Image 1 (cartoon, rainbow, N blue to C red):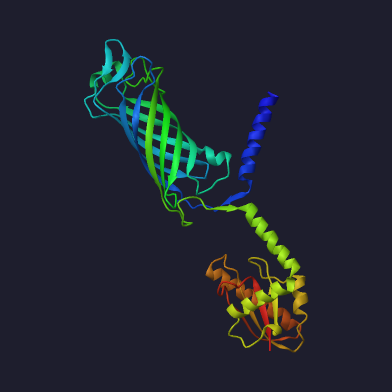
Image 2: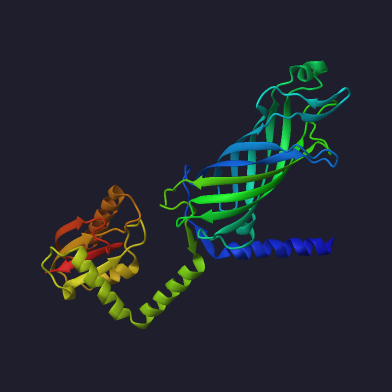
Length: 360
């Protein structure tokens, strides 16, 4: 028992570690849907009567909720002109008079084993998965067998368990072909049931399918993934650069802000003071107040507030103006003359959560 618990714990840890350095962009409701079609052969899992094999075809509509778990709705038809083997005295085959012999509708859950045990990559070509579900199956034809004492009730509840060997194709990996060997079971068979599946109550299937993954809101046909480890390394590198050359880095940022945000104001970099804010906030920190205290009493200034591009335009314009106003009020209370305080919102690509004070 202890050994089994140890193995289960190590398995869980290996899965967690494989996914620990990866983050996914949040998907919208209509993201990661797919449509597919499949064809194949099916027969009873029976050691005495193996032929004839029954052709089968189907359609699927599915959605991947995460790179690991998903679900799909499926509809399949068993076709051909031969009969089903039945275990009923005096009746060896069900003689269907229709081209379609079995009509089935089901709900399946899917598990991507490759993504479960290794780090998800949207550019991966081969994937291994599992698919299992329940379906209702309706037998068509042979009214005598179906109606006789209800032994041949033509509506059944069936189950399925299969393994998918999938290949993602195309430059954008929008197409996928898969080979799926599967087993099926009739869960509600009766004494003389037409879909007993035999051997016992089981079928074996081999399906070849193709599916198309619709484009998502992130512009791809898959989940958008971010490598947390790489992002942390990049962030740490930037922090190291900032610590090593703070004056040079700040100077470059100031130049960009001047060019993009306040280029219409006749002032140079030497006459400007920059106040930073937290995301979606407009209050002054003590550090910001210390920076503003360096502006001489009686000086004439203009204040320009800016915002970062995360929010909506309406919100960014509003927060930019509030930042300009809070800086202007603090300066006025100190005796500094504020000629103008305006919020620019998001201007260009370099503006950030700032208030720029331009002294004349």
